[in-house]
Length: 203
Image (cartoon, rainbow, N blue to C red; front, side):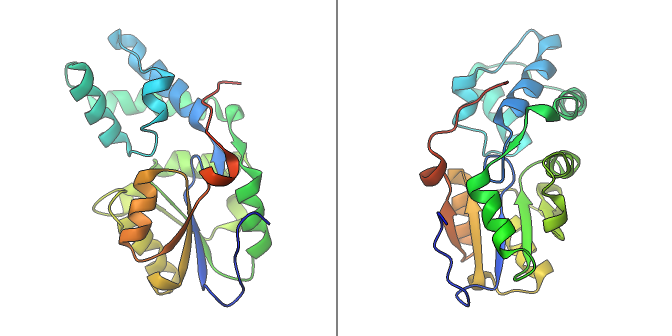
């Protein structure tokens, strides 16, 4: 097992979804690009790859600020991007080095998913990769006041599982997520150290 988890040293596990349990960067980039097409704009793989840990609004804020584009009508953008994402779930694959950890501890300790993503997309992603049955608790940015890098999603997950934050172990793939876990007082694994650099791919 790639991650050192000693029985009795923790009471619950919490996993980020995109980039941690599943490789969905290609599907997300594709959906964003499709949503931007009517506006004559785009996001490159290089720009997106360093920011995919941001929540949707923070990502668009960064895009608008850096490229000095007119403010997007968020509701219309999200409608287009969410449809494109749900139409391309076949692009998503589980990250086995992490999903195997969930399988190993399923039924032994409470486990949750805590994501900055849209709940409908997170649910669809987990269902498409057949990982959904392992997680009773799912927390997304819409469930809390502030998305990662604030600790809110992780603290809410611990609260719902009735576990003290300091007894939770987190699996993350982004700097924002790791900061959120640290601010929540939780031990965290940076899964990038095990899976290597993430490649954004449509195939």
